Amino acid sequence: MPAVDRRKQVLEAASKSFALFGYKATTMEQVAKIANVGKGTIYTFFTNKEELFDEILQSSIVEMRRISEREIREDRDFFDNLYRVLDALLEYRSEHELFIKLSQELRDIGTPMAHEGLAKVENSIIGYLQGIVEHAISIGEIKPLDAQVVSFVMLKLYVALTTDFNQLREPLDKEQIKEYMMLFLAEGLKAESPGAR
Amino acid sequence: MPAVDRRKQVLEAASKSFALFGYKATTMEQVAKIANVGKGTIYTFFTNKEELFDEILQSSIVEMRRISEREIREDRDFFDNLYRVLDALLEYRSEHELFIKLSQELRDIGTPMAHEGLAKVENSIIGYLQGIVEHAISIGEIKPLDAQVVSFVMLKLYVALTTDFNQLREPLDKEQIKEYMMLFLAEGLKAESPGAR
DNA sequence: GAATGACCGAAAATGGATTTTGGTCATTTA
DNA sequence: TAAATGACCAAAATCCATTTTCGGTCATTC
Image (cartoon, rainbow over all chains, first blue to last red; front, side, top):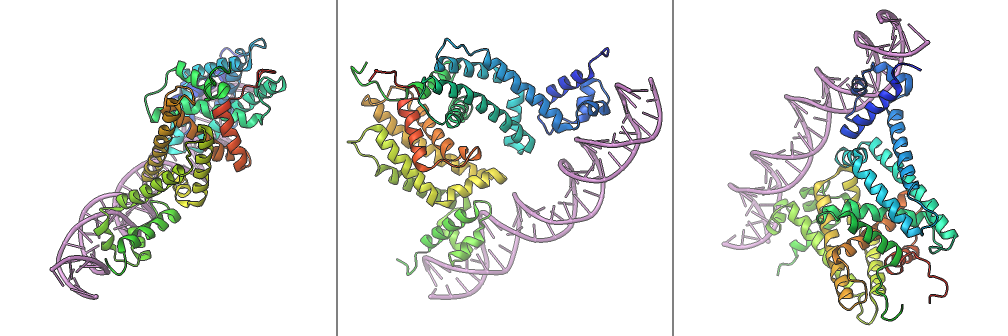
């Protein structure tokens, strides 16, 4: 084992740079400089910029899944678990600039890799949610529906409330977002008919 | 009244051109040519290209509202009415190229006027829905919530199912879209607890 | 043999010449 | 003489040749 783990140095430097400047504006030269490493060294660990980016993205995805997973408790119901998972993802997102920066980059200059990366994250979240949804369906906790559609809608709803809505009015706070999420997904809007309960 | 209504000629020509080529790629010269009118004539009716575009957009918005309004029946419940309104909007959209073209233009080259125009349409739809929602709340038909948030989510859900979803899988058909809309908005996902009914 | 940075070609940024286009207005037309 | 027009203008968009930047390589160094 070497005195300094250069691979790790590179990963950390790249991670910082992608989060700070986005995909396009981080140059391999700059990553090398931040990592205190020659440019060539990067290429002994990663075949190209794309793969370096992908590795960072993957580890973010793994981290998000890990964070989500530890919120799941078998003894709580689906909606309670969902509530916690979404909260954790919300938290993670607010702490990690990478995704915010990539969204911005996609909007402003349409970098294809930013688009691809965000799509990858989105798909992996949907895939993860899909598993949860399928399980909830199998034990009859929620209605038997297409799990992919449900997961997709759940994510879109989440993004609509946390992000898209901010262009219309001042942002909703965390508590409100949770309430609306649960309301739309679990109970629906219909007023309980008087005396029905 | 003149033998030919030049203002109408211009409007129709511009309407065709915007729908066919989008905002940026329709030139005033071309509108004039299609309308069989001198370029200067356009400016006797409209102060500039932007206003011409806006007039066409406004009449589309008015038309959409008219179409929506005739689907509303006081004797039907909120969700039934919502179902019909969304169906009518779906229908309208599939018949009118303008909005599809503008979305495409926004995505491909980011024309600011396309963005502004689509936002205007979106806001006017939300505003219209908001009225319906407020009414439903006032008569206790749905839960007392922020009507703007509810309207916003309703529209986002609709767009997610009709448009965004198509990038993930083959499009849902009309019937499925309606079912999911009603399910998420009205009833929620929660399985009816056995014997609750 | 691991690390490096000078080097290479491809791709992107730059900027200035050229073309297009929104908008005007003197002239024409009915 | 009021409405219609298209030549005309300035500004914006486009093109294109030149320069610069950047991802990736590899001979040299440590």
